[in-house]
Length: 58
Image 1: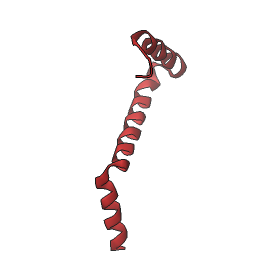
Image 2 (image 1 turned 45 degrees about the vertical axis):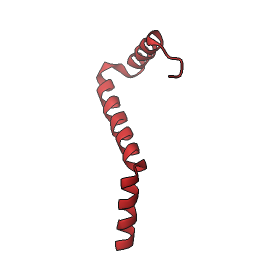
Image 3 (image 1 turned 135 degrees about the vertical axis):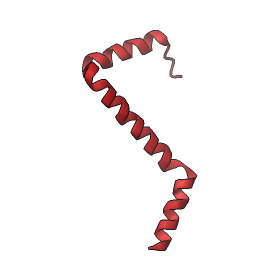
């Protein structure tokens, strides 16, 4: 996956900790998780069908 091994991931984690600090890291993780969940929900076929049904009712 992108040629990233364990040493590279550790370096990235250390850089993120230095930039954002340990106190903001949980907030960033929560925001990222919500964004990914919303993205998956938006591209799923079920949500597209529901959106079409809502448009037809109004």
